[in-house]
Length: 94
Image 1 (tube, rainbow, N blue to C red):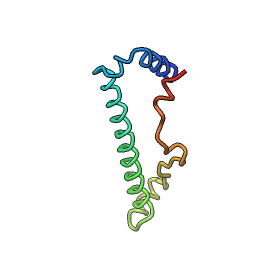
Image 2: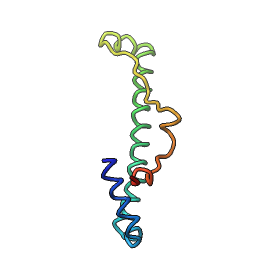
Image 3: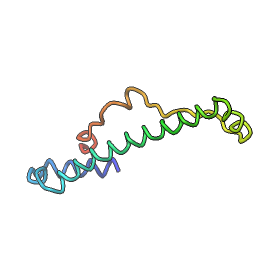
C-alpha cells in the first residue's frame, strides 16, 4: 500500500490540477476521518479493558472472574514515536 501511495503522490505532484480536484480533497478528508476513527476505537478498547480489569479485581465480581478464568488485560499503549503525526506526503514520495 505504501508503494501505491508513493506512486499516487508522484502523479499528484506532476499534475497540479489534481491537487485541487474534488477526488483528492476527498482523499484528504478520508485520511482525517480514518485517523479519528482509529483514535475513537483505541479509546473504546481501553475503556472496555479498564472495565474488565476493574471487574477482575473488585469484590464480588473478582470471585466470578476467578471461576471463569478471567485475567487482567493490558490497555493499548503506543510509544511517543508512534504517537507522532504521520507525514502522509512522505508516504507518497518515492
